[in-house]
Length: 129
Picture 1 (spheres, rainbow, N blue to C red):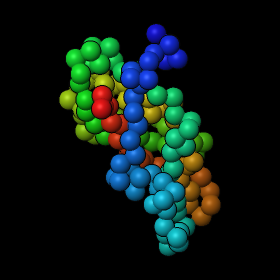
Picture 2 (cartoon, rainbow, N blue to C red; picture 1 turned 60 degrees about the vertical axis):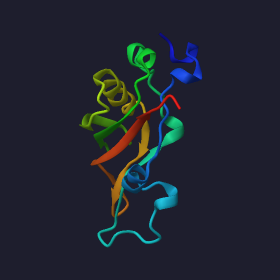
Picture 3 (spheres, helix red, strand yellow; picture 1 turned 90 degrees about the vertical axis):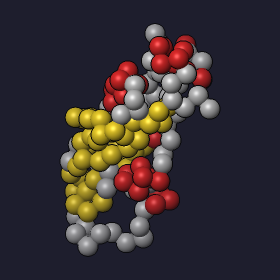
Picture 4 (cartoon, rainbow, N blue to C red; picture 1 turned 180 degrees about the horizontal axis):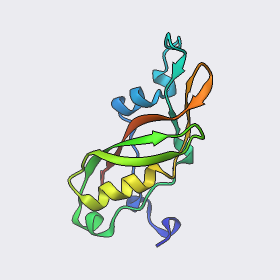
C-alpha cells in the first residue's frame, strides 16, 4: 500500500521529545561551544524522513505507543543497524518504526570536523490524538 494514498491519520507522527532532541543535538538544544574533544552528535534531518505506515491491525485497534530506537549513523549520514531499546508494546509498530528510521537522512556526527560513524537514539511516538 502506498504511503501517499493513506489519510493523514494513518501516518506516523514523529515527536522529537526532549530526550531525542538532546541526543540528536537538535538546533534548539545545540550547545554554543563544541565539546572539548571536537566531537559533535548526529542530527536528524526531519524533512528527509519518509514516515512509515501505521500497521493496519494496530491502527484499527487504536493502539498508541512510543518506541525507543538505537541505531548507527554512518559517516555518510545514513542510519543502519537499528535496534529496539524500548518497545511500544506492539511488535508491528516497533518494526515499522525501525524500518522507518533507515529512511531518514542525518547530518553525521563529527570528530575534529571529520564525519564519523556513531550510535544514537530516537523515539517514534504513535498517537491517534
